Image (cartoon, rainbow, N blue to C red):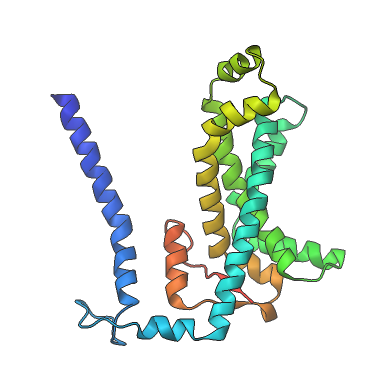
Length: 243
């Protein structure tokens, strides 16, 4: 009986937490269709006025396209580099492994302003012109972390005996990876990709220093709030930026 009550209480608590997180998103979504300029509740009328205004602004559309483009490229690079790093740290033993592990997760702990200033100084010292490529490099430095952490955590929970059994049955390295390792890591990889995309789309601090102020334009309030909520509210003080 006590176990049943515990399960019910936990489910109720989870439901309350989810409502607390997602009700503001729903309210913001509804305000996007508010016919009035005044944010009053309840909403008196619905209109596509603000959506049409946003979509008809060439600078806003360009900013959104560039933000999505950078986020997609960053996600692909973060998936490749983060996954490879996780496999290297988990399956090999070498001198300095703990130091490399620390360096991989360090960008996530550092404030965005520190990462941005450091990258800007590096690009300036190296004579590299600020462009979309430098934005991608800047975003990839901190997006690798979320993929790395997800894949590494899943690898640590994966039974090594499954891989050994596949190899004992005659499977080569590629077959073992395709039939055993990849299915076990699929959800962790997908979660890492989603987090990487959201973080890249939401980050303005690093973008400002790796693109140059003349190449950045804050996106309007609706995409800003959506992006901030996608990262769990942690990026509420940041604005996604694009050309």
